[in-house]
Image (cartoon, rainbow, N blue to C red; front, side, top):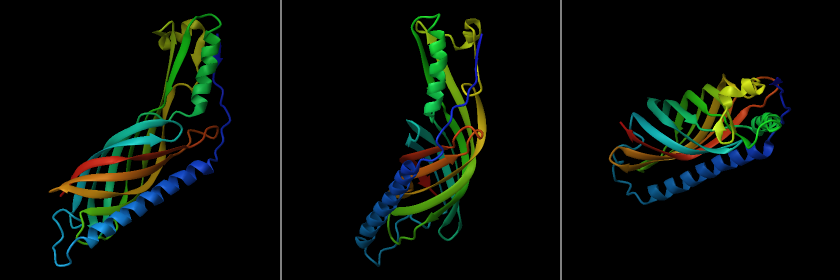
Length: 247
């Protein structure tokens, strides 16, 4: 019987990816600032701010995002916040990232598939590592008078639950639950789940579309703690749009 439970060495440093995330965030804030300046210049000084601008107390929205890090995937969820002081809002968000699987997860599954191929034909596998998360923090609105655009930056902390989802097939049939009969016991690096703290920061611009309805063009960078000392932390960039209402 083969029992597989190795831990592969990983490189904890990825300065190129971190630099890319920071440049993306800075570009987003720059674009938001330029758009805001244009919108403000086109608004007459004597005009009252449109309803639902930065004077609103709170907001709720649902978001859909492209997620990129170890792999390219999608994220979705909801967010809400409420003003506690001037341009400062507290917020809470929850959601799911469909896949953050590192290359090491696929490499470990490949070893099991190679072992199965010695006695079985047409062996294949599929790996996925979805993340469910929740976070709360502070969202600061960049002051803009008389504009439908509301740029902001934000930072928050929370918890993420990561689940390892690995499937093996033989001849097109799923045999994951029958691996024991094939002489394989999966190790903890290919099965199970774990929860770790997360930190998230980012920015965006909320655009008043109609009455209280908004579109939130957003970018988030999320850092999830490593499972243990033999694995690396998970870094995910999320860019997308949220549709919501102000109140």
